[in-house]
Structure formats: C-alpha cells, structure tokens
Length: 200
Image (tube, rainbow, N blue to C red):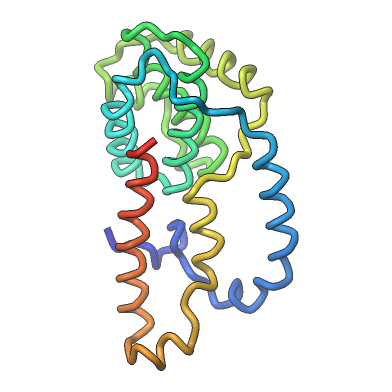
C-alpha cells in the first residue's frame, strides 16, 4: 500500500516539519528516553504464546480494514505482548485481549472518527463477547499499565526519523526523484515494521 503521501499516514512528509524539525528534536529525544525507562520488562514467557502469531495477523488485518496507522498497530501488539506476558489467559479469551488492546491503542493513536467501535471489533470475531466483557477487560488492562500507555514503538521511531531521512544530497547522488525514492523507502520500512512485530 503506497499511501504514505496522505496526511493520515505515518509516512506523510511535510515540508514545514522538515524546516522546524531542529526545534523539537532534542525535546523529543528527552521524552523518548524517559518513556523507555518506564517500560515493563518483557520476558517472552506468555503461557498463551502459541497464539501470538495468529493474534498479530488478526490485528494486522483489522488495522488494514479500518485504515489504522502503523503506530496504532505496533502499540496494540506491544500492549498485548506485555499484558499476556504477565497473565495466564484462557484460550477462549485471547481474541478479546487482542481486541481490547487494539481499542485502547486506537483511542490513543487515532482521531475520534477512526476509532473502531466495540460492536465492529466484536463482529469481526463472530460476536463472541459482550460489551461488558470489553469494558471490564479495558479497565483491567489500563490498571495493569497504571493508566500509562505512552510507550514508543518501532513505528513511532520510524515516524520521527522518517522526517529527515531523505536529503537533497541523496537526490543528487542517486539521480532519482523524491517520489520514487520515498516509494522505495516506504516499501523497505513497511517490511521492517512487519518483521519487528512478527519476530517478538
């Protein structure tokens, strides 16, 4: 999908951001360092780890269907990984965990109009759970994270550094157009981001 030139894409490059990037670069790095220190340790020891690949593929599919950002996708997987790593969840509830993590991440990363409704997420898994199930688990997950989910992911770092990754010198050396170079860069980064969440 080559849609990074649209404003709702994580890969959208704005000239005014390029011009102003130095003003907030140091502040961003400081914030990210602080957020990294608050991470909950991840030990890859979830009792339900065997379901992870299926859950990640399911979350990817929903994000594509709902046109949710890479940042939303990666935050969802991060929340799910950490929560499952610290809880023993019965197999019948793992899809509920995935949906609720997606709901939380979408509320944080997306605009109000892009946030999927509980009924939509539930319909995607044949209405297995009740609205009450979603709301109760959302509260449990948020309490587990102490109501703090501002964790940087690979997609967030990519979004930040993508703003300055292509320079005018690159265009001169490679004798390529900005658009074609960005398409190639987008495809490469998309593959990388997919591998990051697949390989945990």
